[in-house]
Length: 110
Image (cartoon, one colour):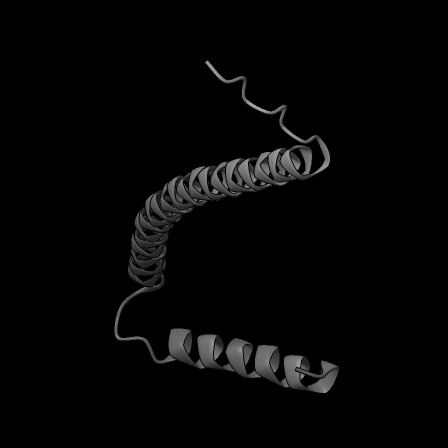
């Protein structure tokens, strides 16, 4: 909102409050008490809403943490499996190389 927009908003707010106080069917003290009560109710409502949002945010954060830990564990397991497969393949290749390069001695006749 631009500066003139905010200025118009606050001007309208002030005029509205002023007119409301002038034509209010209650005395000034009653009106002030009414406004104080409503302000306190609004404050209590906001506190409850904030507490609820905090609880929701905490629950979401815990859920995300749990999911992240689970994904990490599954990724780690997959990595370890692939490492084992690769290690076995390398060992099989070495063994095949040894068998090809190093001839087996002839078996002795009994």
